[in-house]
Image: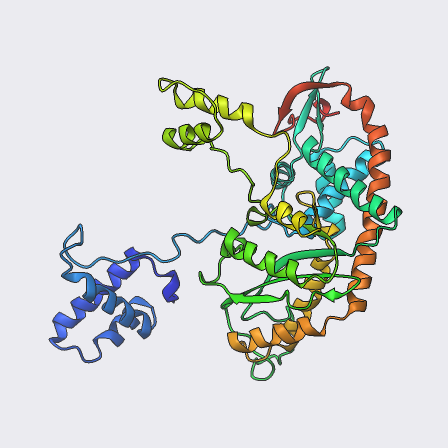
Length: 447
């Protein structure tokens, strides 16, 4: 059995180090001891060398809580991807549309029915329990009706935000609004990004070989429209500093995005409508009110700035209740107000609805070309390749992608009106405030 160094845990390292010292004492020499240890433990010689270096460097460490050598286990923070519940945005949207199709046909959706439909549409390989967890993640709780049965219904705030977005975009087109619609988003490309299938002979002696692992990561920010294509001067590409993590969003903070957003606004040649999602770094509030985990002194300072009288004897819970009374009914975002001052309007995408943003298809096109042309797998070459591929995206590409998303928006807006009529008799039977994250085990208890 062989190990990779990244998979060698602290207990295994300790055993290897003790075996090495044992053979070293027997031989009274360091010659070939590491090679013998590697053969005895079934690991590579490089692994033994690294373990010896780590053990020797910590053997006499006075700051160590325990005497003797100490070792660390790698990948403590690694989280295994859950392929059945952590789908990409487009597969999530397929599941969402499956539920909506049940509504539109007048059928009652259950987890089993949705699972069967997902398996047929995109070869979903999750279990019944995984599908239930996925529906919860997609904000489809079970609502209890007045006869005790449960009905799978999309969360109301998600529906409201989707309807608001679709109505806004459809109205702009209906009124022939002359302002260009600019779509922005971020994406990432790994250093070893390549095609999933590459030709090789049976002996693997000829053909293209891809390095193992994903390598470093490059993060791209850009914006574009069907009127201009990609906005000139708005492209930003930088390297991730935290290695290969699962989500690129943690590599972008509010300050980085804000500075890029201002530069992008300055690059616009005319007044525009800007469409973007609700990522955390997109959604800085104009007035940051105290949260539930704020210090008492910070809450008191905030209330004082708002000229609100309070007693020094009041507890944190009482102060937070005063804060709640001052919260606006509609949140104001810093970037929205910044764009408004420059004459632009920001329209927010509804959560979990990336299919309404055509730049997602542009990014997919860019990644396909990078995967085809990436031959060196060097981070500098990949960065240069991304610049070239993005610059090769034409205005016609944007027109096709925007036309496709506009068609989806128009169709979904009509479906929303039709769906509301179908669901109204069911909604009237839902008990207010009654919701659950699970359905009854028996199919007889389902609507």
